Length: 301
Image 1 (cartoon, rainbow, N blue to C red):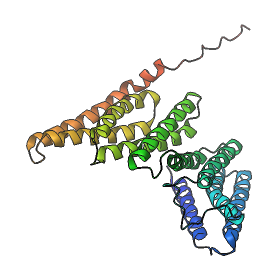
Image 2 (cartoon, rainbow, N blue to C red):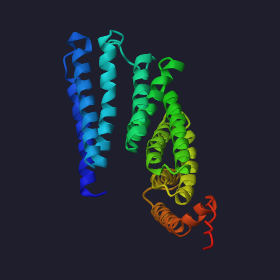
Image 3 (tube, rainbow, N blue to C red):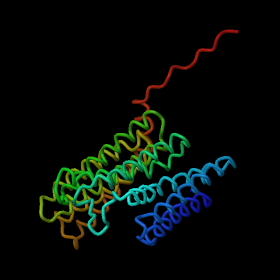
Image 4 (tube, one colour):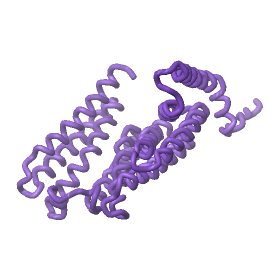
């Protein structure tokens, strides 16, 4: 988190936004020809720029250029499908309500292109695009099983897809791929949190279907965050823990009374003390579950 990295990453998102804004402003005439050519041009330009940057020793800018190239691929795919006449009309296209194989295929293809780009460059930020594309594909796939899926259907899909992403992140951690695993944890838990938040805020159903799992999962995340050394788990865990406890305190106490304020104070202290415990014992707890190779025995001389 230093100034060059802040500028590089912010610039990446700014370029990404500008490219998609430009593609959305291109004329719809000629059956997607302009979209395809412009998107392909940007894709090739970012790929060549990354090659030049890598050769010049600019690893992070080169990796970010590859990431933008992968993120531009959906424009190339959509333009090509429109050019050959198979992309559905935008006016009638609602892939989240009615399943259509082409938007789903574009999302999956983008993830595959991202995986290939990662295998070539080993730049972990590419996983941000890959995981985002797969989570989007999971939402598009809901309509294949449920016609006009409801909010609960989408929340369930978010829970399942997010949980699978977190599991992949855990396996990547186990094999030492911590940088790449970060995006599976961050985006996976975000998807899980979105699904649980829907159930917790759904006024038409039992809200405890959301709050009870939020409290349980958050406590488990806080306990595990120290041993596995994942700040991502601690961030989502403390947010869920605090929100769920406050929810139950609001139901049990008068918000204008002193007992409520004292309970909020106790809640803050409990979080602070959990941080002290994780700092003191978290690493030691984690080492109990990590098998270290025996020390090498040097041959006698």
